[in-house]
Length: 390
Image 1 (spheres, rainbow, N blue to C red):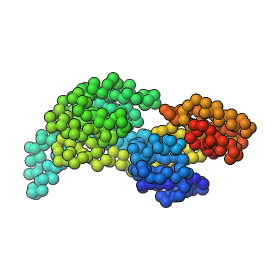
Image 2 (cartoon, one colour):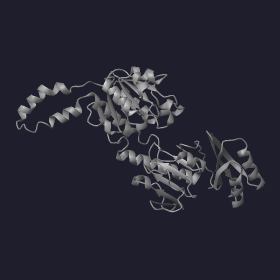
Image 3 (cartoon, rainbow, N blue to C red):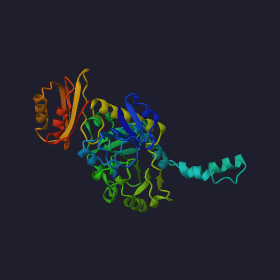
Image 4 (cartoon, rainbow, N blue to C red):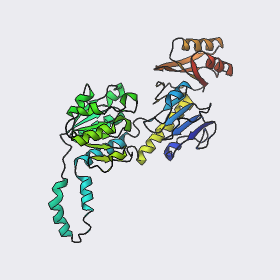
């Protein structure tokens, strides 16, 4: 029986993925094998020795102490792409709100409560509507910073709207490149993209390398009157620099999902309450993906969409046992483990070894279930972080 402790309100569809006969799931589970969470901050919380894995139902993992967990051999999952459609649609809404006079038009109409005659109201609106005309997206250039799951969907949407799309992503993966439309023009650097774009949409993760990537220097390159949209993370943008650019008339408008007090009350800022991924469908998708990734890891040792360990998946042969172990990414560890298995006369049928930065992960299928002495010997081997038998 596997034990999964949940934090926050997890979608019922996600919880339904766990077979009741094999899983105990709840918010007060003791000695958990896994955590399933959304926004709960795990920094500072005691780590139970039983914990094998953590799944964050969402893309960002800044609420998880990933480096600390890596040293303990705890696999951390996220759910990239599960909320992509929700964010994509909000980006479109943000561009439309920033381009057309939708919000001021609505606000103006609500001031007309003193009118009781429909014909009079209609005549007044005909007279005043030019104030809220705005422009169109078609033919404009959208610059996308970050061309992953969300960025590529935003690109497809913009192309369908008749926009030109340019993109910049210095860390573009092979999978992301395959998803990306060939109609997207890739830019060599960020200043080039900013200088060319009427709209800039940010879709990069929050990390040291992206902190305040849109700051004073970047905004100096921006096309005059451009509209900046940030539905990624608040730390990617330097808010003080953005406000200075708005005051100087360089940046046309800022649309974000991360309001700050200084942004309130400004006509050139459209600030939303961090609702980018907050749709019923998105939360269900994230929860289902997170749950299935936990199940595959707990039952098969397979790793898909981990933020700290390499992707490793291997089909299982019925009637065999599986040993998995993580280790420091140094030479000789796998050979040492294989010698331990040979010494204990454990027959290896298949195996897979992958590494990622300082960590390596191994799946070894063996003919018969090894005894505790074998597992103990593997766990005690130099540079082995964690080992288990499935």
